[in-house]
Image 1: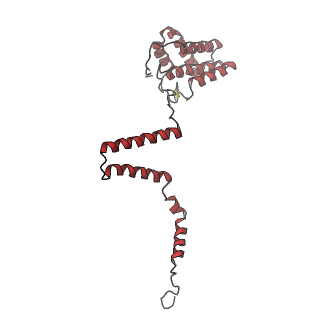
Image 2 (image 1 turned 30 degrees about the vertical axis):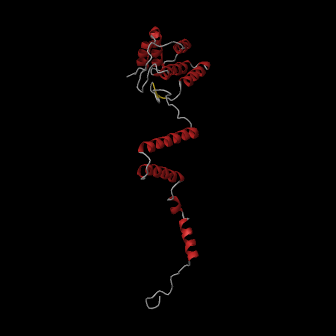
Image 3 (image 1 turned 60 degrees about the vertical axis):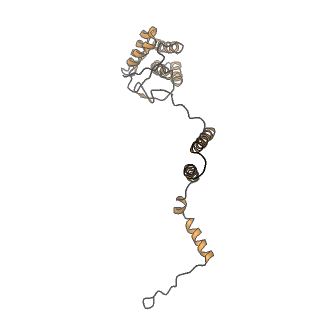
Length: 218
């Protein structure tokens, strides 16, 4: 500085140079991240179009506009179904994750296969536990019973007997074996594993007396 005055003269760019500087500045990350996404642009355009249907001063009657809007909505839904498919019905089980104290999301078939593998390996205890869970999950999937987290094996057997009264004794016996193995640590026998499997096989082909789902409070 000379006498308190700046010695450098501010640059006065020309038109082309100013545009180039502006483009370089806008290309920086903060400006790019602030740009609207293609989804934002399409959404805004659709919203503005719908808004214009009901705000524009035209001679078209409102009912006609409403029908046109509904047609567009239905068309968008059809396109979404074609692109992404029909949503899966997540009715794998009313149990969700809980099944007799276990965080388990397996299907009845998966539990039965696990029991069969344990049986083949002479692991009778695991075969009993997995097959009894498969039996409960199977009835839940059929909506014969609804099993909630906190349902006990005894409570399940008691309610299942309402749908299959002829199998009440076997259901109670299977629940007792499950509790002994699961909570008392008793080793199951081959005969007990076979009995639980036979009960499950029988109930799979037996028509229940209850057609509607029954809640298990405990």
